[in-house]
Length: 111
Image 1 (cartoon, helix red, strand yellow):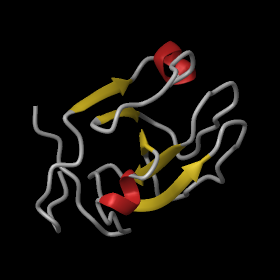
Image 2 (tube, rainbow, N blue to C red):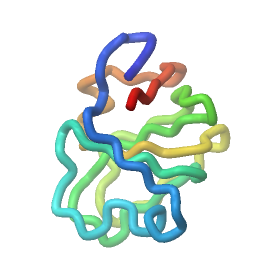
Image 3 (cartoon, rainbow, N blue to C red):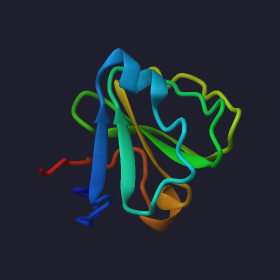
């Protein structure tokens, strides 16, 4: 949820915290639903090698403040590291634009 916009971003957020789940990411998926996301811990860059669909990436710091955005990352790409980022949240293509997510937004996880 974004504090600055006070809106629900995702209903289903999976966490990739182990080496295996972080390495696998979204591989093997045919798509990512609109209300789904994958929170990859301890990384400041991602790749979309072997993926079948584009995604948006929200890079956040330790406090879940948005420090970088990459929209429409197509398959077979590599993102440049976002040096202030501690984690990446991968979301459905178009989510960044639809929710008007901006650098500086504060995200919250409610669970």
